[in-house]
Image (cartoon, rainbow, N blue to C red; front, side):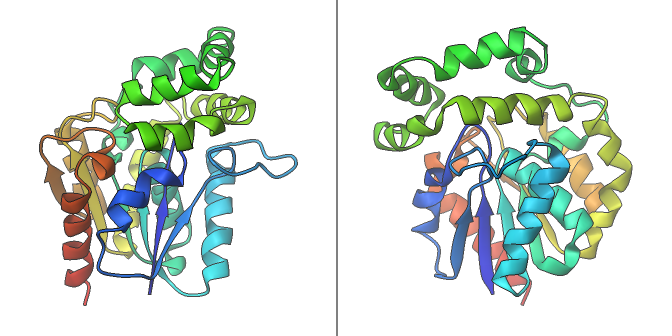
Length: 248
């Protein structure tokens, strides 16, 4: 049984390294979505549906159902995959369950990216600066210096194009349209991780509502924010292993 980890925006698979190192299993793969630490195929439009199709192709190549874990937009892709192709997974886990609540409002930066013209200017300011500035940006967001230096080179024009396309595809009310589909997640066991200080993904109450619709377990990680797997990797690993242990 493989555990597959999928990260989000604006990241690479480096964010999983501290947590993976603390797992008691070695059957782990980290999958980088196109444009986010990996090249984009020709003609790739970076829509939600395309990312779910990409993830399905990765899991098909593994050849057996996996324990699928997603962070940030990776968590969004996980939900999409679990709805569309439950045959490819044994279980699923996301840390952005709150965004699927019908009342979720995108955070301020997302709304900038979703605004024509303003989004292009905002992304250009992120990707066009010297590497040292991009490293400083990630450090300011909470990544340790060594990890920030590993991720920052991927903050480039390709990632910028994918950020704009993905967030515009998910502009409300588009994302809210997934809410009636959430009971379909009951086809496989699920875990909702709530990082108590994550300000990007809605409230704990929103996450719990989604978990209830999906029939998923909930674990709350107090004292950590968006990059919980970096801030407290031991506690994150323990929460995942407890969930997997209950699956038998």
